[in-house]
Image (cartoon, rainbow, N blue to C red; front, side, top):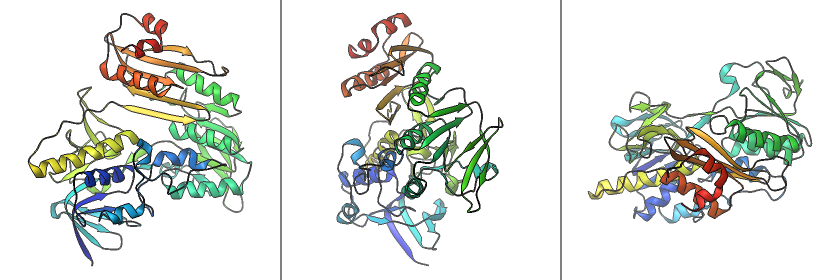
Length: 434
């Protein structure tokens, strides 16, 4: 059994891994000290592209165009960059066992990797309908989107079933972005989700009504309040219909499922403290095991702004938490201190000609402002959230970069506000004058 030893090992090859590697280089990592172990076949890339431009029928995004760190305006780290920096990029390698007591990881091929410090950046895995034993959920052309291989398989099906019928199961990020991209590919599209409106964890009914209306005007059929109860397939094992719980049957050439994800923490079960489904860390992303750090989707960390433990599934946090962990590791080695992680929650999405951003916390009273008519030629609207007389969250559709910065500042500063009427009346002006 082959054995390799590295001072630092990053477990996982997603967004966090790439940003951590860049930070290690900034901090002066020496050649041969750092390895990234990834089960994917390619160097770290900006995952959000997979549900957007990667699936476009014209001028689609392709690697090496969206390797990290282009998503945040940084340098694009090509595979050669890792070689040049003396970082060992170990691809197509799945770790099947982790023994933190002996600082050892073991791959499916029985290679062992020893580490002095470990950063767990395993991310999430999609929740599949087969997990719930949904009838026919194993049929061909039922897709989930997480890795570039998933997207490549979907692209082949889009071409093979040209101008066909797509059913999108789920009304969250993936559901909304994939419904848009399938429509752009000239498919007949139906969305199905059980909630009373889309993106219920973030959107208010009023915000959701705009997007549902906009999608309907694009010709997308939306069915709410029911779920996919089963699938029918043809003689080739390809999906041909979706049976809904309410009795309706939808013809389908392609089904894309986006019903959530779960953090990949199984390897470390029983070896680290957990909280809220993730690995419990401090404000420097150090786990209960002193030389093991966790970042991105798998970390449950103290959210300084709100004085509570939270786990955040978003690319912005994946990037920033990775950088914080590396800074903390290097500071610890040098006997220095760094500031605690002080994260402002940030979420965004793009579809069709739309682009929204949200900052802060969506708790308390929501106050809508602006033009949120789905039929408007240039809709522009937003929402503030007020709690205890302060603005704690802000959402904006179709904002300029300056306006998006302004709503981020509002969510960070949490200014006092006299009344909801003031926000309705002032709208975006309130944010821009903070």
